[in-house]
Length: 97
Image 1 (spheres, one colour):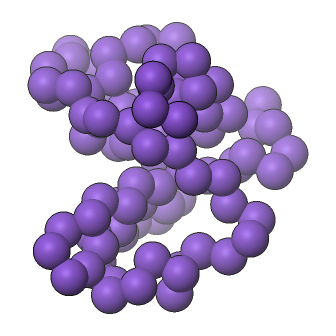
Image 2: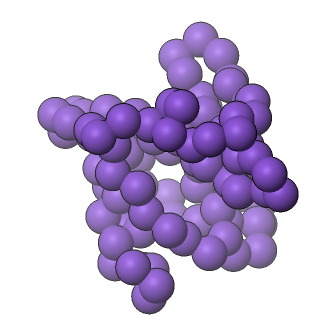
């Protein structure tokens, strides 16, 4: 079900002098800060800019990396289930990139 090369997603949020990293793995939710985003990202990642919308709580949210990122970004589309579908959505709905 997962597209090769696009099996996980996480969010990097810039804050003054550092970055907050949000990510949901199979067993846990990761939340930490780094001073340099390159300390966790190498050349195999695809990065997209996206302006978050007002977050509306939905009745149903997947407890996956995609579900958590959609919640943080305010994306209320129940048909986005995989990281690749989320990437396609971000490419289509982002005017700045």
